[in-house]
Image 1 (tube, rainbow, N blue to C red):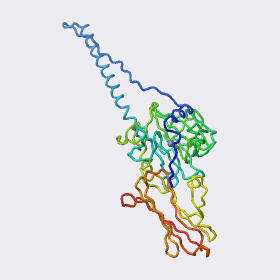
Image 2 (image 1 turned 90 degrees about the horizontal axis):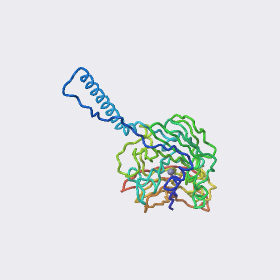
Image 3 (image 1 turned 90 degrees about the vertical axis):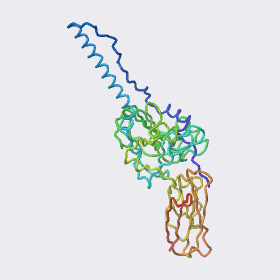
Image 4 (image 1 turned 120 degrees about the vertical axis):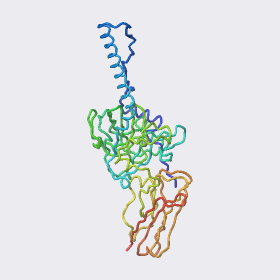
Length: 387
Ligand SMILES: [Zn+2]
C-alpha cells in the first residue's frame, strides 16, 4: 500500500496566503549607515600655530571618521556571524524517537522536485518548514517557543481535522496554518508554529515569551495530513532552513545549523523510522492508525484474525521492508516489499484468520526489518502470548 502525505499548509502559494492570514512582522533590511566622508581638507605648506591646530583638527576628524567607518564595517561583517548566535530550541515538548519524530524538512529544490537539506527525500515540493509529528491524533504534546521573543500574531478556533481530500483542503483555504503563533525575536528573526490544537493557544499577542514556554498543543488544524507542529523560521522576512542556517536553495549548502547543540542532537537525520510494530485483530489502515483507532491490547483467543503490522515513515526508494509473524508451531507468515519510490508513510502487515479450531496457545513473535543496499538499517521485534 502506498501512503503519500498530501501537500500541506505551508508550501508555495499556501505559504503566502497563510502569511497573510497570520499577521507577520515585516521588517526592512538592516541598514548600517556610515557617516564617513573622507575630508578633502589639505594641510598648508607653511604651518603657523593656527594652521598646525587646524591640521591636527583635520587629522583628528579624519581619524575619527576612519575609526567610525571601521567600527561600522566590523559591525556589518559581524551581522552574519550574529546569525549563528540565534539558536533554536525544540518547538515541541516530547521524547524524540519515542513520542515525536521529524516527518518532513524544508524543500531545497527550486524546481518541481523535492530535496531536504541532506539531498534526501524527506520533504515535498515547496514545503517551507520543519514538521515534527506525534504518533496519532490522540497524542498530546505541548508546542513551545523555540527562542525568547514577543508574540506578534496568533490564531485559534480552527477545528482539528486531517486534510485528506480536495474538499478538506478547500475548507481550510487561506487558513492553511490552522491555529498558529508568530514570535518575533531579536536580530530580525521570526518563528511561526502551525496546526495547533483548537482551543489550546496559551499566549496572547504582545506577550513576552521565554524559550521553552508553552504556546499551545500539537494538533492537526489547517492543512495538516497528520498531527504535527510545522515550524517556519524567517529573518527579515526571508525563509530559512534551520538545519542549514540558510535559505533553502541548494541541498549541498554548508551546514550552519541554527539549532542549539542539545536540539541538534535530538534532531539528527534518520532514514527509515519505525513508529510502531503491533498486533491487530484485522486489517490495518493508515487512517485508523493516524486517528488512534487501532487498539494496542495484546491478542486474545477470540480475535477473528491475528495480524502483525508495522507503521514506518521516511523510507527510501529501493528499501526492502519485511515483516514476519512466527506462530507457536514455528510456522512463519511473511510479507516483504521493495519500494519503488520514497515513502513518507508506509504500513505493511501479515496475518491470518482464526482457524476453526481456535488459536494455538503460545507465543506469537512479530519482527520487522528494513534493508538498504543489503544492510539492515532498522529492525524491531515484539512478542505476544495467547493463553
Ligand atoms: Zn509543514
